[in-house]
Every structure is written in structure tokens, then in C-alpha cells.
Length: 191
Image (cartoon, rainbow, N blue to C red):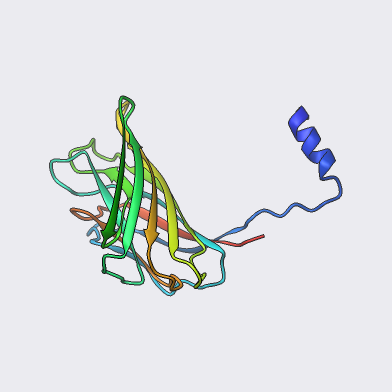
């Protein structure tokens, strides 16, 4: 046993350590016809947080990448903001925008000009989604690799609304989602 694990085991001997549990809520995989949006509806309020895991691509012509954004409870008002940090191996950029109609850059995937059958991946945490005493926040780690080139994005988003999140729409900024794009929604139980 390594020294760090040994100290941890000794300090917690006889104690039960509880870790958050992930439970699958729903999975959507796009079929042959493609999809213009992906919706998760009737989300139960029985979890502490939500997580979305996605692999995807976009049909935007002439581009190697494009993004998908998130909208909560069908709210199309200018109630969203985001911060982002992006890197491509040779440079890094930051960005921040407010008064948006969705949380942007939550998912950044390959687009039509990228090599065939290459997809991006993302993990998005939506924190305290059912708490009606605070605005909702999310964090996202996403990106793609194109055999040595590509990008990685670390973003945070804000929905300026205290309502419990009961539905989530994932919307491509341009184009549509092609076949095999897949999103899975999980509920995270608290300790």
C-alpha cells in the first residue's frame, strides 16, 4: 500500500466513507436523420446535481469545429452568461459574455470539414439544479482532437433564474447533430 493510501486508510479505519452516486436519467443517441436539438424533459428534483456526458459532431459546412449551447426550461430570454478558457496547443484565449439567450460553448465538437468519424467529447456539471434559492451554474470541460490538432475548452455558465431545472435543451449554434451524436444525463446524489 502506498504511504498516502496507508495514511488515509489509518485515519478512516472503521468509518464508512460515502461518495456521491451517479444514476442514469436518460440517454439520447441521434439516428440516421440527424437532429436539430436534443431535449431532456421531466427531470426529477431528487438529486443534488446533474451531469451531462456527450460525444458529438456538427454538420456545419466549411468548419472543423462548432459548438452546442444549453437552454434551461425553454427560457429563450437574455438570461444567460458564460466565461471560457480555450487552448489549442499553441495559444490560449479567454472570453466572457452576458445577456445571452443560452449558455454558450458548453459543448465544442468537430464539424463537417474535420476528418470523417471524428467526434468531440464533453462533461458538464449543473450544480444545485433543484435549489430554488439561487441562480443556476454549470461547468464544462470539452474539446476534440484531430490527430495532433484540436482544442480544449473549460467554461462556466450562468442561468439567471432561481427556478428548479426541469428540462434541458442542447442546441447546435449552426448546422445539426449528425448520426451517432450521443448525450447522457445523470443525477448525482448528495452525501
